[in-house]
Image 1 (cartoon, rainbow, N blue to C red):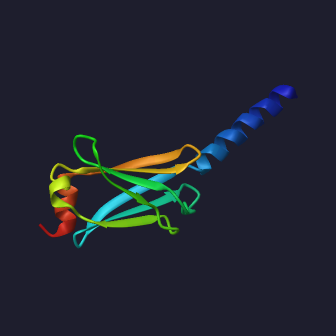
Image 2 (image 1 turned 180 degrees about the vertical axis):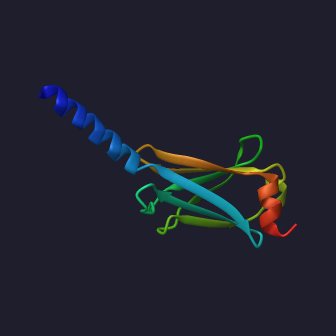
Image 3 (image 1 turned 90 degrees about the vertical axis):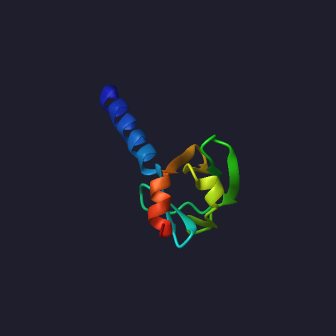
Length: 111
């Protein structure tokens, strides 16, 4: 019986951890980069930090998430020439990233 309880506890903890996985998606629309975030359970994080990194992994911009889990910023063509990495951290170990390639940027900006 103790073994069964231990197994059930491990499964319950693993399920809880999975339910809070952060998902990040970013795209370019009309010269604006749009970042959307959501936990795997469908909820939006209400706060967090978004770092935009260039190809050299240098931070070019740091923003705060809006309460709907999004952030928007103007596309900087010089910084985005070789793509962008978008890192999102919401605290408590919840973080993820999205890579916008030069092709993604060109497709969304009308080039």
